[in-house]
Length: 156
Image (tube, one colour):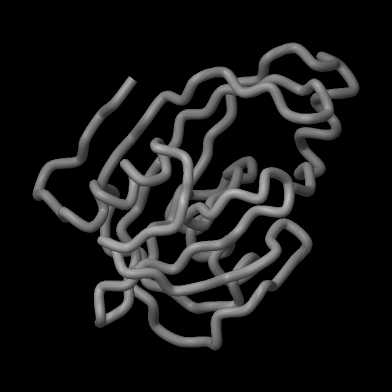
């Protein structure tokens, strides 16, 4: 996964020390209630589209940007469904990060889903009840977005 330039600059000062970052997950659903997933090149896992919020960027804008960059699709962000504080991650390069993650329920609008960058190996539609093997936290984000309950969930 490419490291955003602002994080590269921060890492010059803090090394591998933990960084507190803002993340976004876009759970993209189509009219058939399938979910769009990407298979990540760094882990090989299937997952919803996700990314790091750039300085000054609204997390909803990040969701739209990442959908276009990663899967070549245009989406509409319908609503915020969950805010989560993740566990501390240690990336393959030794960098450590923890995220305040915003999960959005999103609607597919247009574009032929295809790999749009080097962060992913594949892109595909899956039935929400027929998901491939994936991390439980990604599965949980999909369940929350699909349920579309009226209240945003706050999880720590």
